[in-house]
Image 1: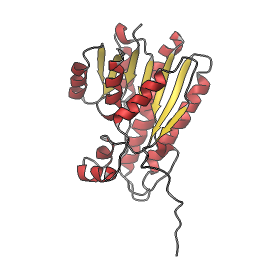
Image 2: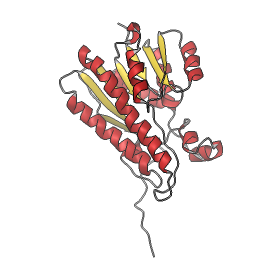
Image 3: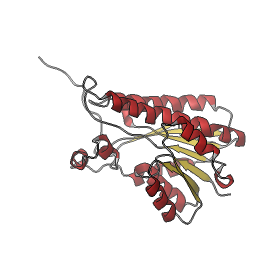
Image 4: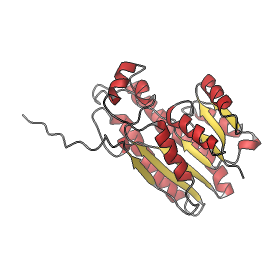
Length: 250
């Protein structure tokens, strides 16, 4: 039987790469995002499987609820929820950061994640099967200057994932948190408000992870035997590791 994946933030980066790879494997798809034209283009591209697109801003609870209620019968039985929608804004220290940026990150990375998950979980529980994969970040475990609110939102994703596992005990539903490190996508362009030069500088002289790398990990996770649950998977490129502790010397 053909499986169905529901992917948020499907218009670029990890979400788009996962959609493409799952389509290659024959999965039907529900693709959600804010950019209509990109969703339509992706739907045309992935014409070997049944693709339903849903224009939605996950920060808007009523939009999310309507999106799930409006799923066609052909796409109602969700086997995989990939909570990929998320963003980072700015790198200023906390004392100089823009509160609007903090609120946007909280609304997207935390509230959006909760709205979509809560709306789709009853479907999975009723069927007694499914897999929730949340897109976390190493920033949820490892602090860095300027990471402030973004890192905190990803720490929420990790703990939310852990608690979902506890709540879903005995339902047959799996939950995994994927935590990428340095990865080249539109992430840095968004973080620096469209400044391509600043975004490129982040990856200068490195070999970062790619969206395809993450898509391969997601596909590997969903292809594990039903009794196997990978709770969290942290991944960095070889060029990235941990920095020494900072010491302020007077």
